[in-house]
Amino acid sequence: MILALALPLAEIGQRYVAVQHAAAEIVAGMEAMAERVRELAAQPTASSRTATEELTTTTVALEVSFSDDGTLLDFQDHLMELEGVRRVSVIGAKDDVASILVELEPASSPETPLEVGAPTVVCVRCGRMLSAGTAEISHGLCPDCTRDFLGGIL
Image 1 (cartoon, rainbow, N blue to C red):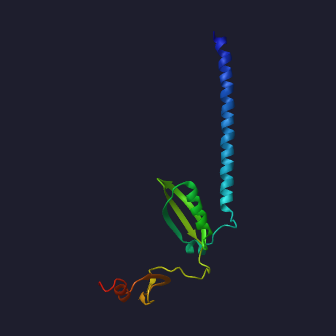
Image 2: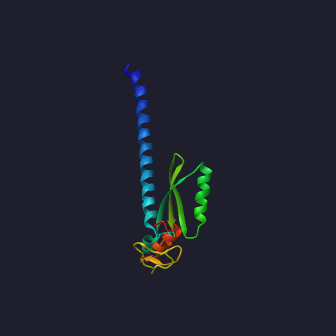
Image 3: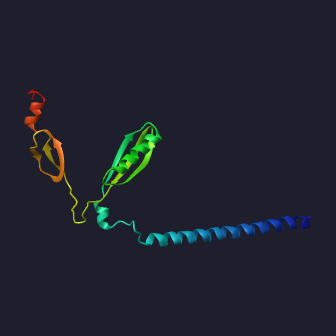
């Protein structure tokens, strides 16, 4: 009886040793891959951004409605064709609403300071400055043009 069990137990032992050896090879391979990834991550690449680019890059988050995947992909392609757009990423889509990140190219000159604050606002009709701000221009209506537009109601 003991001899009858010895042979199957020996076979199971051999299989266990083979599996243990295969698992050790898999772990060694994974460790080698992880080391290679660390080496690659440490190497500078041509596409690495400079610190100035990181500071001057603007990312805009959008939520858009779409009817099908083709429409969404077409919209993404059209955004990519716009001047000054670096990257367009669809980060999620649910119930016909997609979340999109649009990354804009950095300012043309690294010496260009980041403009923080509200834009300069000018009247869309007469051009009068309504509030001073950054070099970016936004539009509004001055009180006189608002009255003219509304026909004297105000």
